[in-house]
Image (cartoon, rainbow, N blue to C red; front, side, top):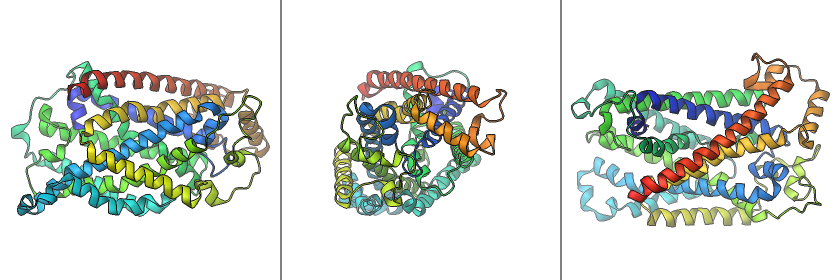
Length: 441
């Protein structure tokens, strides 16, 4: 974030961080709306695509799988890049031991911890490791803020850009990094399936609080980090601090954070690969909601066991797909060492697809007044006689518009705008990173 701020300038950089959070949060909100059209516990990108764009389902799931796989590879690359420095920080004699400063050794070693975590079926099984990752993030934030308050980097600080940016190319090349920072949409449906209270008010509150906290943290780190080093700031700000125990612990904290984040990418990647394998084209004479066996859960009144709703995979298939993801990501991480190249393409394509394009397209299609799924949901709402308009309309409740019809029309048009915005961002950033960033390395 500090590097992105140095390229964009403080004013524009903060605006883009807030804008990216707002659009990412809207994408998450649309996912909570889409989940209402599916039976409790059965929400997924695959299930939505089968009742909206059934013959394009394989493309959507393939995009999600590639994105999650790329992020997982980037985590392994970070481990390999940082661990030699961590060891040298704790022991000056470590440089004399060749394997301790070899990135391949550390990637291989940490796989022994990552592998068993990646074979857990449910996201809530990772809640304790997620707490450890949050503690690591908190330490990094405290470190950056503490160095800024202490002022021990001011002698090497470069110039500060407040309004002016470095260049349009530099700004566009940094934009996918900010989008990538908010991307958690691949796990949203799993959270909605597993959360105890999935009322719309509850899920909307979770989305708002999560995006708000993330935006605050990003701005805090971006501002304090950038003001500490100015335009001399680098991508990995922790490596710029003078060698000390605190900076070494910070590097170790990053390693811990990405190590426990890797299984969070395996979970949606595995589900998407399974959906790709199971996908079959649906003929026009067939009903999109009745062809695949996995869509039984979409039928009103269908009974699905809790475990089947989690992933629907047998033990052999589950183990085979998980093993393939781990082995392939390990091979790529051992052969590719450029993190910037990986993030450039992952942020430009996968993150924009999952954050903007898919949520927007799915909601626009499924909320059409002509959609049988929308008509069934409206009938169920009428039959149940919802007691609170606030719980029903979430973020759009309490606005100046009167009547649920107008709010739904506005939300539907906004979802289409989000999908179009995502397509523009994808093409622009992909071209920029391909022609001006990756090509120069």
